[in-house]
Length: 196
Image 1 (cartoon, rainbow, N blue to C red):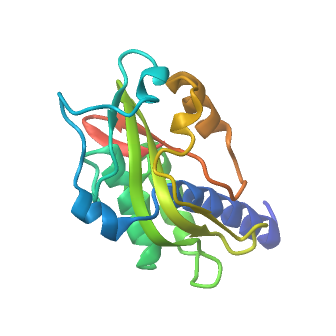
Image 2: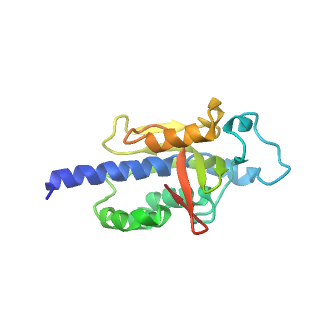
Image 3: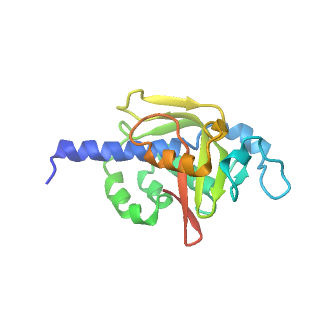
């Protein structure tokens, strides 16, 4: 059996990783609410969208409600649950295979060690089949990390790098335990979206 300090560190690392994912969705909530969504056929795409590759659909920054109906809604759900300090609620936005473990670990989070975010908003979202990458804006903090907080104000950050969707997908899934901005990877399972 792992020691209590080892369990606490592992739980803290996992919580930070979940927060990092949740915080990726941050920023511009008030501005986005009035901006609406620039998705759908016929809407103009940002100049960098073609670089993601064929078969990728890009939607613009939007204010979304928490849920599992879209990748942005899943990320918003996680951020909302964290900021409301309803740590077990965040589990419903993670892949079903991770939810039981999340629920067991969420009881160990407290207001002093749980990640949180401010001024959050959903940035651009790129979807390729059952995979999606969600950008966020805002300030995201993970107590005990160094640095403890990071801020992103560019809803197209990382997307506009010229890299393909598959490269960005790999990078988002490999970025672990660093408290820095990254895109949130999401997957569709049985018609619902979850943070992957």
